[in-house]
Length: 292
Length: 300
Image (tube, rainbow over all chains, first blue to last red):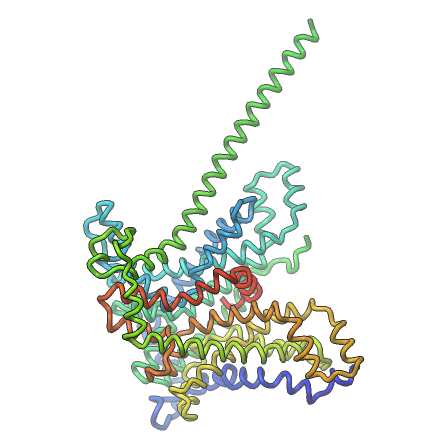
């Protein structure tokens, strides 16, 4: 019976469609991006080799570093908001009636297209008829700001729908992890007289540390790649105030047709994402495989 | 005498204890109520924007500007929906979304199942290397592949061609799908498949007739997750498709809303149409969606 299941031909046949697609459309392109980053190229005419010139330009490009700073801010905000999601999950995973229903309700925004979410929140932020300013005026604030047009507010205003979109996702992950903790551990701590607070922070949170680590990677790397919502809501504006790395790269490529420079940014983005994934896993090292 | 004093003391003690207990109960009740209020506020925050969206999709501009945002219009203006569906290209975009999403889901499930079958059922060396090759895809930012893909598709004349979209969606969803399937395949007993091999069935027969049907539940989970990702995808379609007749809803509503930027009812109706399939899927398949998102949470 082993014969059929170890036939090299059949194994190759079953693995190759997926592997070839991934090679052609994901893995080879990232090397090409690295290669294009060494070129001067407008996407149409012949490319010419310029070595590391694009990267030299990148280091001196203040607009790029602004966008990188905004990406970093988003990453920090997103990582910090995990604390809030964790608190909600701790409550939800206690003996709460309707917890299952609630966590599903929380999840709904995450299932919707970022483009639709962006359009909806543009309406919410609409300076005169949006629900936010309508409510602010109703409680007596006569001159509420035009959120997305205000350079000092735009990035913050974009972060609110991001929270709205992803809250349910992280709550779902934390909730599932918390529900996996054996009841007996919590019970014995209760018998020893531990308070609910102590049980949460000294028993439950350390037990799900590996999951928390994964969510930190997801939140940080996800923020660094963040694109759709910002592209639609502000396209990086006003005046670059909400530009992030991905939207900056996209603009350099498909508005300014500087494909070589955009490739350099794309490659930089890849390296940063891989490095940060590695770094967070390294820094937040815990005792792997905690024994219950 | 002595005894009486003792019992008095005891009853006093018992009374105090009971009082403390009921105080604790009250405190517990108050804190539970507070927690419920917090959870409910979070729920309202998550749902309210969508309710508001549905409300203004049923109003005309005058009603949007003059009525309270929470008020229902006197007569709901369903004609907003009729108008955007028939006047613009929304029905075409919708159809394209269905075609691209459906084709990519089928291809992804088939290729991912084949790969997972090989990785968990067949016998060869360096399995973990191959599994790793599939999983690395989870960490690649889309933007780092965009320019080469655009270049390749231009050379192959696949810009403004549905094929570029379908194969890209398929490739980028393979890692997450294999991840979801892999867990299920690992715990699925091998006995039925082994018995079939004893009976001399071919590998293909086993895969198509036994393994695929047995994995139907996890395939459903993976399918709904894939459907959501594809339906909502924006970057690839925005980059590879510029011809109006090949656009999907995510890009199409962009243009459409650009044209109708002051007509709130039309915009609302368009947005509701674009998210409706996902909401309907959610109502009927929420457990599967929750399961799929938990199983594939590395994607994010």
